[in-house]
Length: 627
Picture 1: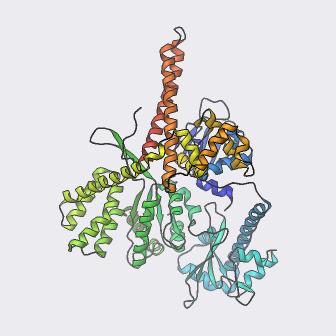
Picture 2: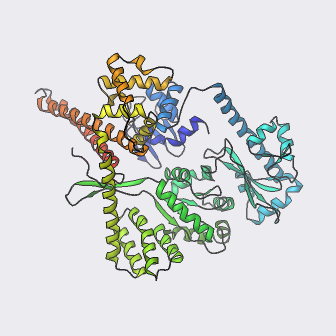
Picture 3: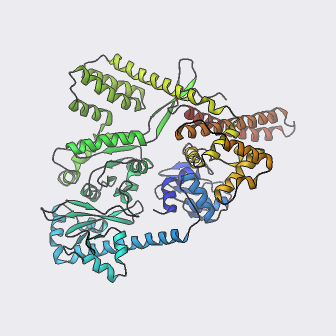
C-alpha cells in the first residue's frame, strides 16, 4: 500500500472537510457552502462512500488531497506531509528506491490483472475447464456473476501461467513477488494455483491484489488456497467483496459478515450486497474500523459449528477492543456532570440452520435468509447462550464464571433500560436475585472508577510545570508522540498541535523543533538564541519519570488541552469586555457579531472540556471542568 493510499484509508474525507466547512446531512451525503467561491445556497457536496467532493457551482472536485491543496494553497508534497502527519503515516522525501517501489506495485497490479483475464478466458473457453464450469453451475452461479467477479480457472499444468505472463512481458521475479509462482527447493519455479476455480481478491477500490483458488479434485488439499502475503496483499486488512458492498452497507445501515467466498458471491447475486467476508481469519481491528466508517450495525452470520462459534466469540472480543465508544453524559451523586462510554456499535448474530451455509440457504429459500438476518439476536444473548453451553449453570462456580464473563458486555450496552433488562434476564436464567447482579454491575463500575483515579493520582506530579513547557519538554524526549497526539486530537474533532498552542519563547522553540524534524541534519541549538538553547538543553538533560508511552500520551494531551482551555477562557473574557464596553451608536451590529463569535467559542470550549475529561478518565466518568 502506498503512502497516499494509507493516508486515504486512515483519514475520512467528511471529518477532514468538516474542520473547514459547516456540513449538513443530505441523504447519504453531506452539503455545505463552498469554501472556494462565494455562494448563499449550498452547492458543495461530500460523498462519503467514494471519499470524493464536488462543488456544482464552481465545478471544483477531487479527493482529500485535492481539497487540502485547494483550501490551504499547498502543493502536493506539502499536502502529503500535512495529511500524513494527521493520519500518523510517516512521509519522507521520496527516494529513488521509494519511487521504484511505487512503480513496482503498479507493475504487480498490472500483472495480477493480466492473470485474472487469462484465468477468466480459460474458464469460458478451455475444454480443460469443463469441470470448473460444471462446479460453478452446480453451486448456482449465473454467467453474470461469473463475469462480475471475474472468476476463472487455472490449468493443471505446472507452468501454464508462467509461460503466459512471460509472453506478456512480465519476469519470473515479478511473478514471485506477486505470489503467483512458488520457488522449488532445488531451483526453478512452478505455478502456485493449478486445476482450481480462481477467485480474484480485490481491495476496497476494486483493484486485484491476490487470488483465492477452490480445488476441483475431491482428493486435493487444501480445499481453498489464498495468495501469500505480498506487498499488495495483507489478509488482515482485506474483506472479500468489500469493494462491491460499500454502497449496500451504507444504504442498509448494516454489514453482514460471512465466512467464505461463496457465502459472499451468491448473496450478491441474489441482491443481498451488504455481505463481506474476512480472508480466512476472524475479524481484525482493521476490518472493523473499515466497516465502522459505513455503519454502526454488524451482523455475524458465521457457521453454526464449533469453529464458527469460536470465530464469532473472537470477533466479539476484537470488536469490543477496537471499535469506538459513544460517550454519554451522566450525573454523579453530587450533581456534577461526567461521561460514561458505551460501545458505539450494535453487534448481532444470525444463527444459521445446521448444515447450511449462507449461499446454500439463499439458493434454497431467499425469504428464509431475510428472516434469519432480521431476527439476528443481540450479541449479549448469543454470548450468554454460549456460556451456558460451556459452563455448568447449576454449579456456584459455573454461575460465577458466567456472570464475570457477562459483566463487560452488559457495561457496553448504551441504553440503561435495555442494560437492566438483560441483567434481569441473565439473573433469572441462573436462578439469581436480579438485584445482586445489578449491584455487581454497579460495583464493577465503582472499582473501575477508583482504579482510574489511582492511575491519575500516580501521574499527577508530571504536570507540575506550566503546560506549554511541559508539552515541549516531553515532545523533545519523545518526538514520536507528536504523531500519536495529532491523531488522537483529530479523532476527537480537534485541531492537531499548531503554532497557536504556544506563545512567546515557547512558540520559537516549537517552530525550531519542527525544522529539525523536517531536516534531521539541522541542530536545534543552531536555530535558537543562547538563552532558549540553554533551556532546551536543561530539559533534555533532565530525565523524565518512568512511565508507559500511553501515560505520556495522556499527559501531553492533558497539557495541550489545559493550555487551549485557558487560552479560550481568556479570549472569551475579552469578548465579554467588548460586549460591555461597545460604542453606543454601533452597539447593535457589533453586539450581534460578537455574540455569534462568543457562541462559537463556547462550543469550542465545551468540546475541549469534554475531550479533557475523557483524557483524565478513559470512560469519561469523572467530572468535566466548569465553563
